[in-house]
Image 1 (cartoon, rainbow, N blue to C red):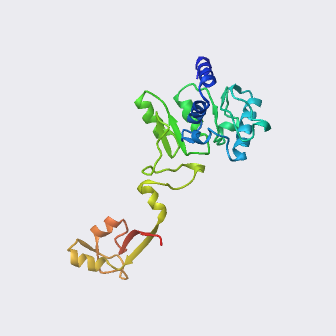
Image 2: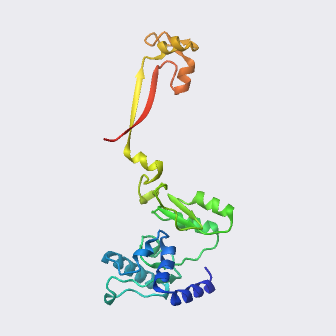
Image 3: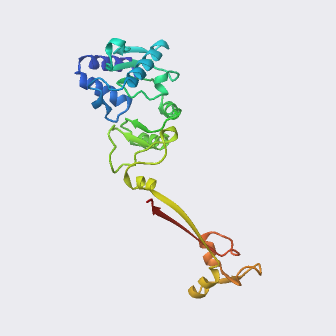
Length: 244
């Protein structure tokens, strides 16, 4: 982001209403609509403490506050929207989830720089890409190691969406048909000694068994379909059952 863009954003954040400023910060930080909860003082002191720690750490390591300030005791549970520039990857705000109205701005050189920095995080819930280039959008959406990727939008959650992340952002999904898998149990069933009866009833091609202990005739076609040696006569069944 250029210096001119930073100054423009600073000017806008100074003059917009409080609610709009919080929405701008929330869009950059999370994009999940959490700004609705930031229009009033937060009910959790841990959120304020996290914002205070992230801003203080960034400023101590060379970042600049274009707007906002480090929350003091007199602020109570309220955090004013803050815009941080000159942020580097060794700062806490780039490696921990803030969940507050603090927007860090990091400079990048090219697409590879963005992808490498984004994938360096141990978290992988959601990523957002803003571009006019469809090919770039497709490349990044495929390369980003995140469970959800929004292209030119920050609003894509809902009941039909398989909500969930990669890496340390959790396992499984909520919502959509994929979310139903979390309420199902996988059962493996193996039937043995079925080759000869199957061959006789289906009229399949058979070959002689290599071992006298095995059935006299075995279906070559049947064994190749289920992916086991011809000398083994097994039928594998995978089923899912609803949990009670």
